[in-house]
Length: 251
Length: 251
DNA sequence: ACCTGAACACCGTTCAAGT
DNA sequence: ACCTGAACACCGTTCAAGT
Image (tube, rainbow over all chains, first blue to last red; front, side, top):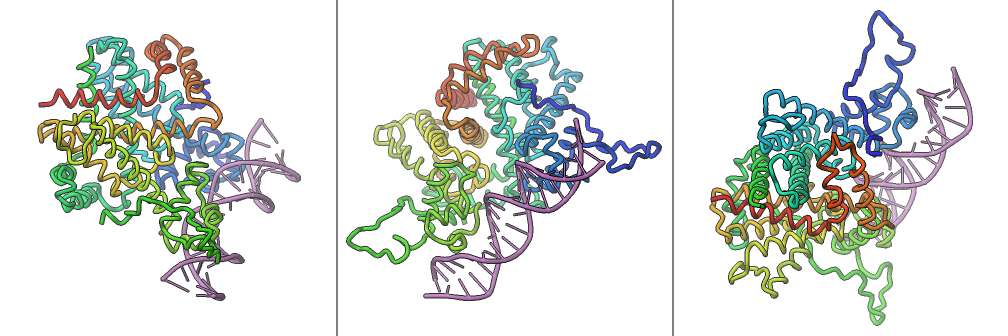
């Protein structure tokens, strides 16, 4: 039931061997994998608005109706694309196990807190690289890739010695924060004009805060310089650490 | 600059006094307020998909092009609708000050932690009542209503005696969690079939977790009963408390 | 079994034309 | 100044028809 959307991890976009030379119509037959791969390419290049069945069909050199033979509808397509990105990101985080930060089974002396940070950052970076993913999480939280992330984080809390009665609250807060923050960061990225850089946009907003009425907005005015200077990734991690610190107070 | 989207708080949807009787064309002339009010009604009744300029024009008994004279485009309309809902929710939280939980100036003996909980719950409940708002926050975080929420939370951290060097991290984690969690909750609500109740849906998902492979998903299996039994609102608040506990460890 | 592409029922937005 | 509503350039999805 939860594996309905499982798709392969490796795409082979265009394996037209010049020796084989079967250019009948397209280099390859259509497949769910090729469709999802093309969808991701379109989404990365142009955002969610750029993904249309017509654009997808053009890129795959097929008719728009053909896609429906492999994918139920646009929601399923976005879900499959999201699952693919999350799967790859988790695989990357796990392979970081070799350097000791996080191990697949959880055995060994790796620090569970550090493992949680690695997983959280992997999600953050994946969504930063594919901002369209940010809006998809909450739309399909039952996906298999998501379940693996959920389990990975929960497992580390177990290792950490969090009392079982506090597992669910601690897990829920962490997972909610990680995907919520990553999603908001992606939304900021989507909001921004493609050419401009992040720090200039931040300076703009911080400037607005600094000019607010001191009587009404004393806090935002005081904090404006830090808004201008902060790094989104560090900020994200500071939140994770704050929640971990809160979890540490539970016993 | 930040007050571009400021709109009135009170709508007077249909003030057709039978004595006045000016049914020239519509009960009222078109206005930005009436448009936003009608948009909110459509959004609440049918979700984001139901809000079209044609549906809006029909409800307002006007042409679809007329709306563009008062509102720049659909994004601006959604931003104004969101601003209205958040403004009302914050006003409700502030009026809770009378019962002592939160005071507008922050003077008096009100507990800042409790004030933060009240504000957070007000946001959660507002988004729960208007799920379409959940997807809008990250799209327009510079709105005036949002700034008031930001300031309200930051101000309580100040009151709480959090060292100034930790203000920005603490504030950022709280705000990110509050809007991220509320947004995800709304997405779950949107996902659900309109007829079914939440606890049945939760039991379904928890059942799926309980049937996962014990070798791969030990944590999710153990935690499945709590998933089934939890209350979204309590869960949300537990996360806020965990972050507050983490903030308490900083000095 | 798989693919084609025209057709259907929509969208947001524009704009000449009205009052 | 404000409103009308047809028109434009799109959408996702379906489906008879092809191979």
